[in-house]
Length: 291
Image (cartoon, rainbow, N blue to C red; front, side, top):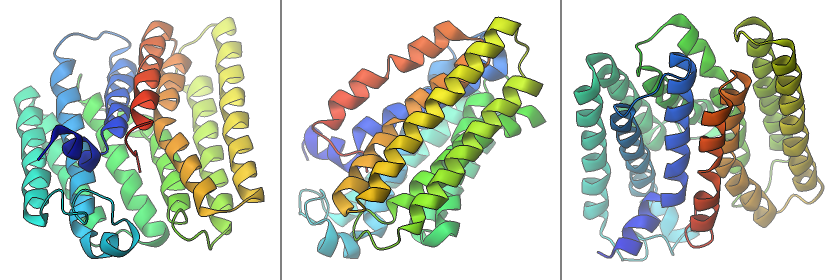
């Protein structure tokens, strides 16, 4: 098994978006008071993410033989048995790292392992499947918040990533055949909910001065317009290739979304650090798929 095969299996570029989730959640939960111990949660999150990507290919083996024969397992680069071992091995590694950080983080890691397995095995189809996938990202964000423990506000702050991933995942169901154009409307609705939740936090949760409020609402507006413009283009030319390109763009778009919410909270330096993850992610995406 080569390193390239392994990177293709886990969809390596997308793992960077798991890092941005953890850094964003920890920054907002701790009011920007980060330290080196956050690396444990980052590593745990990446292992959980790559576990989910690997198990996805294991559970979808029969389907991939027909629709994605170039993936590492159906192409024969890896055996299905190796895939199962890698997938669950990465999950166990994530759990060990989470528990080594704190008991609360470990329990959240167990919850994340459960939703990852549920999505990949039995709750994948339709809007319910999209909610299950979004729950994986939601719990991953909560994992980042365990950097300082958990509060009811942490669970509220994870809703934007939940809305975003629900819309992204529902639209992604069309990237093979492009049959249900209504998926664009569902995705647009979820993006608007993401933006509205950001406006709520700016108005009612974050403590910002007048200039910061103006900056925050300008950033929300810019983010919303850019994403809706992308959706409109796909709606006008609803083909599998265009849908797949948009999904790849939106998966990588988790990074600027995390940076956006960190900026909305007033932590501009950390927001810039998160944005710095974008170039390496896009560079890797030129050689490795994220979806």
